[in-house]
Image 1: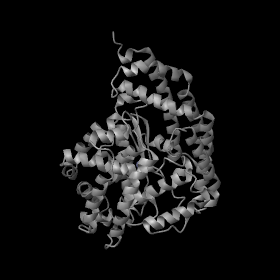
Image 2: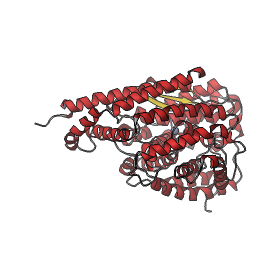
Image 3: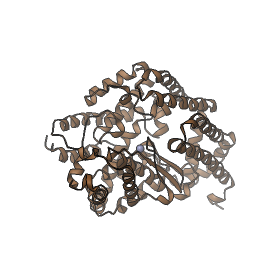
Image 4: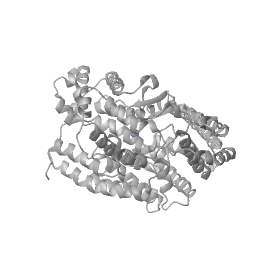
Length: 510
Ligand code: ZN
């Protein structure tokens, strides 16, 4: 007689071990959320230790030989079930996680984690003065540790491969470089063509906007689109982020600036996109390796889809602009929706990635990806990074930072993560968002009209059905192929940009 999955005692044992690991990881996430929102600065050192301890405990449990043995014993069980079944997927993903964790010694995890705390503290002190020399030794150590991390996966073709696969399973240095070179060759001329046209005026966005009112608008907007506040909350933090603590608790943060209206709105919509993905994962996956978005790229894709493809569309503001106007009558009362739409879509060569428009944004991300790979492959030394950074900005965007604060020190990533694997996801995400949205529109051409009327259900449900609910069951490549019928490619994104910005800047037929 066939044993039903939930009656198999070894499978039960696996589930209970996986849940404990997930509990430890979730506890670490609560500590990190608190550190990024309400913790007094004095707590930073102890908090780093606490997080490292929890991470170590989780890592120890994940690499416990008894767990490995259990997974070995479950091979027949896994083979007896279809690839797509929840139970087979849980075993498959657990095996993948254990396999990767086993390669990385516990002592290395602790060293890396405590180094990252030091590097983060050094970065927060060095950033305001743009003092690269103060962080250089930390960054050199990070590079050394990142290379050591990669060395635990000697079967990779390129040193960055394992670091990339850690964030974007199924992607390699070569595939990413191929996509990015094609995209860059299309973006640079588009940005140049736009720069030759009369610039859009966005001065209306930098008036004074009351911070609490901005936050109120953000609450209303994400609530209306479909973020579930019963299973989430919205707080302020200097660097906006989303964190999943459980199926019932997926939190987002935003950044509010009194003289930059778009900051709070688009950060909120971006994080909401991440959160809709996490909130949309099957509740039954909680406590298993399936209960998170499948890759950095797919996650970013969900965020950018709502932030840009929807949040910066004309249809979205046909719905929300009257609300926003009502809240900021003095500032926007006399500004027609079309003028607002043009202002939020201004394309400009600027220095800071996180506030870049959707055309130039990818040049920032591709540039960092290339620098990461060059450092890992020994073609670029950390001491030469600022110069390489500036030179690449000159080539791709025609501008050069005057200070490292708005140059090489602007991003926290290399100071809290490894070097390698951190940046490809942003641009892969834009490509995925474009390809998925194109498919959604083919099936439901009414989506923009629905959105204009304040109905976000059609798109939300389509994403829920095709992407969100699966969590980590399929890789991003598998999902893109299943849903769109084609492997990931750059054409949908380029088509989208050419159409939208061709209209906005009147550059069709060039
Ligand atoms: Zn994001």
